[in-house]
Length: 365
Image (cartoon, rainbow, N blue to C red; front, side, top):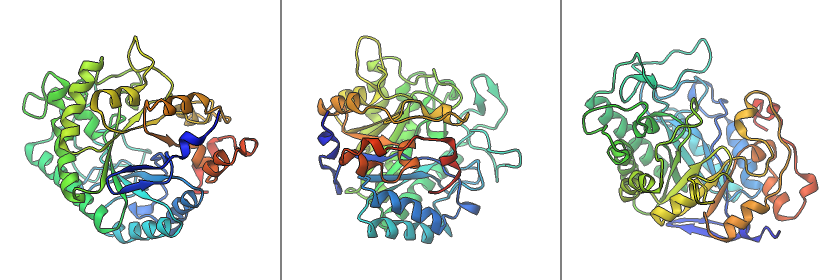
């Protein structure tokens, strides 16, 4: 099958992409003390040189004491900002486009036995998992300060010259914790019995980010149904609930929904072949990004257990893209293993595609 659909230009607001390929955000933990290094800048530059349409950085956390759970995850405030400026300059010098992913892990567990949060852990209802309550719920003041922190990082995004911004609202981290009934049983305006009620916190974050970046910068929101500790979890159980969830977020200022699945080809709801990105585009009318095991025969969760993957056909993906089921395609491990993946796909050099091995996660190649 022709790969031409992957190499059509795409534009949303001031973001003008030369192709439909997005580098998916992947936590790398190579920023000691939260400060990205020259190696980080070089890592992103190589993907820009390789032809990626838009790079979304690894999650980079906003200014709250316990916003991260790994000391080597980058931050997006204070002393880190001049170093992020260098990342932007490197990517732009290579002709690329880049967006930071703004993140807050919420009550997600720390990485490593020696990690301890630097302050009070933020959690909607004090739960670390459904029914397991051991934390203090966020106060109205905590919530307001967190929303403001996203807004400050958004302003920095614009000032540093990034081309777009993404908010991490997926995978069981803070924003998703508010969305999910399993971790949000608040009785005030930040909770409620419906997904539309529980979308309020996410919508307010989107509003703050929109105000911070201005009206012309593309604002992407990453969402998922699955959680890092519960692959079967769902925020929306049918298309009607999906629309109730997404409508307030779209109204708040989202331009593109980044729809995370473990396997992009799996239908989201019974009775339709549409995946998560397909249904999201159908109910909102907004552009969507699909993601999940693109270009590889194994899914990414298995990689954490040491499993490798081999290159896989893109025919099914391209067929869906040609039908405009979704607009953009995010690629993770294939690009992590090979910064030249895009060029090889474009030029038909399929025999040169690399296998993915877990060792690729251990370096910034």
